[in-house]
Image 1 (cartoon, rainbow over the protein chains, first blue to last red):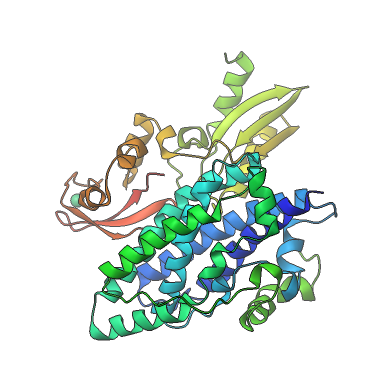
Image 2 (cartoon, rainbow over the protein chains, first blue to last red):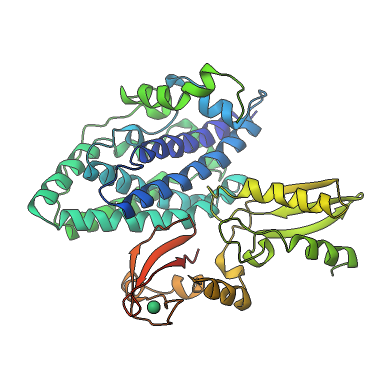
Length: 250
Length: 165
Ligand SMILES: [Zn+2]
């Protein structure tokens, strides 16, 4: 089996799955009805992307596994998502900061990946890129509205940006898996993604009258399976049913 | 070239619709990508609108059911992601059907890709009820993945806008 491609696909799937789970926690609790619908719709796009990626990962694996086994039967240390996406939803500004930093990265990452020469990853990216464009527009609008809003919304948005900032450098970390795949034309060039991300985020934070935090202490390890304390709780909630009743069907 | 049997199969499949947009068949929506007969088995290719489209499993099942009801018990439904679904596959007639149903049809994505963020903000979807352009967006995300929520300032009615994608 192609271990690198499997890991690479799994990392993308895990990002989508965990962030979807976080967004769904807003169902019936968002500040307004439209936002409730927006956040869960974005979550729906992500679970769709996650399914396509898990199906492909299952195909790449040499074990007899399904997309559901990958989503529901792996323990914390086997998850490969970024630390950013597992951070708690906090208040609405925290959710928006997490989402905005991820959305800008995700869109730039997908725009790189549509040209990769792995047919399946390119196909999934081409489909996802259309959805990601709507996601970025949504979270950018909120960063501007809250940052350049009332005194309280500005304060909350700035605090959220400061809090989530430490998890952003991990998005651009390139390890041996990335490098080997990039050399074969199978992966996104993260150095290019970083340039696009930096430019977009710097401009938007300024427009939103927010201060861009200084270079942060690098929090990383998610892609190697070393997570913050939050992931275990997400998995416990997400996996309880299939784990307590293995093989159950509706 | 469509064989006579393919024409017949397309006719049969024209009764299958996306349960979220019952006014258009899967062919009119662009979800149906191909019908072929291989070794006596019908092979139908479909593509999801959005990655997370919850209707796609239902559509696949409806395809098998309607084929079985019409004398094709052995069929296979294949799901493909590429080329990625686009609203540009909808014909003008399909868009008119959407409008008549009360959903503002999508503009062409090619028109959209050349416009700046400012131009996008100036864009207004015509109200499907009274045709007024005095409308405004309420949310990019609406009742289903494929629709945005708008309201008409003229007739005061809210409406769904089919998002161009
Ligand atoms: Zn009207």
